[in-house]
Image 1 (cartoon, rainbow, N blue to C red):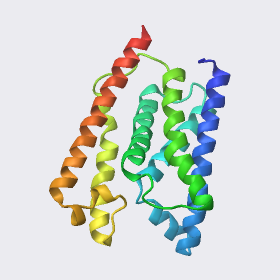
Image 2 (cartoon, helix red, strand yellow):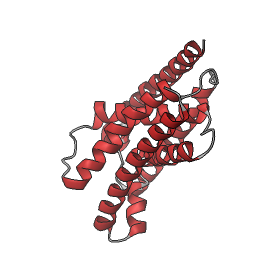
Image 3 (cartoon, rainbow, N blue to C red):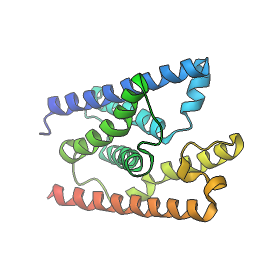
Image 4 (spheres, rainbow, N blue to C red):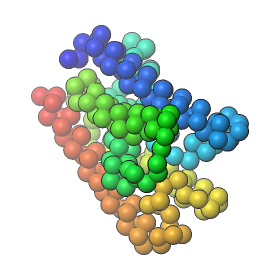
Length: 201
């Protein structure tokens, strides 16, 4: 399946889906906030949005650039967008009732890209480039986001995601949730490295 044409086409589809979802989200938030900058500031609070922006940029570059982007970057994108999908399915689905465009964007950013990107990684990425240090490097991004979200949430009195709201649920519960997610993240990253090595044979 790793022909150049198929890879570029698949990359373009993923990039387009991410850009469309982000565009709908930005437009809706722009209307709610009354300004573009205000809307972008609100959306910058969400891991879903920042991660799908990374997906959109990475796959646009992968589709346009000769040779694409490296497998380590694609591994980073894959594990983090998969985290978006898993967290949404387990902790966030159904918490907010969405209508019209917001519902479409929600499906694209929480369900479609988190499925398509791992499929792309399985079938379209060059093998044998990952090692066990990579998941540790990949984890810097979600950890940095967590610190940012906690500081911003405390400052504005509103947390982007309920499971990090330590004011409401307490520090012990939030800490335990974060530990479980971190351990699962690193375990999945290690499995990705092992699978990459296996598929390289």
